[in-house]
Length: 386
Image (cartoon, rainbow, N blue to C red):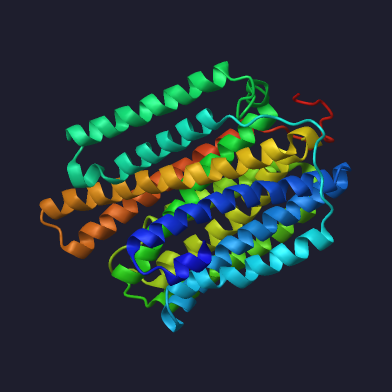
């Protein structure tokens, strides 16, 4: 899919390959995380392994932003996709030789109807939200899109309740140890990655940074993530994920609040740099703590389910968060422009409001972590979901 993306002759081909790329990631990411939970069964080893996983996830996210700008300006946007090809090829060759396979003797059927319903429902919801500013809240098209999304998602719930093999067994979500980390993962995706899209617009359209300079501007974020993951890996086994998740999400919320003060004439050192450092450190703590909280107690029969749900939660959060933040930013900018503000002032005003909403979302997640997560990291649960 990445190869087709990099060679795509039209926007339609690019979109189709991106969709296929998403399918591949949906299979690979949960499977890789499930391998971690299955290969490391002892409590301390699993906690350490999950901490490393969370650290690499955070670092990969931060470094990807930097490399994206460098590759785009130095060569072409196509290289952002083509660089994945040798990485995927190496993975295909190396992983089967280094990592033992593990599969359950029990075979479960796949709830295709539920998967189609929830995928179509989320797609319709995101599409409607992204088009609110083009059509307006009073548009029949928007109302129809939201109603269609609601109907599909309601249908998904009905299908799951009647399915003999639901995508997510109800008993799984009734456990606080499963529900809370996934809710935090959703809120994390809705606040941090979505906000970075708007920050990139601010750097390039307001501060007039080139793609490379904008990428380099994210280096403090990567440094913050690296420092925080080192701290989190050292502490999560001792104090558990709850204080780390609460502190990380709270720190990230503070960083987003700082970024919301960046104006049209602000400088990078005073308006952006402090916010990026805080967000990076908070994200690093959060990545490690939430991953550990979600998977440290899962037995091997539920490893794939838990990993898939955690990956899905953050992706849904990113999609919905980005749609909502863009709608808020665009709506605010449009209102300011109508009131006589300059184009730059209007754009900055919209971005500032979106950052405040993202900060509030991260703060809500911090409160949820403090109240909802367990204070310890118990040994893996040996109860099978059946």
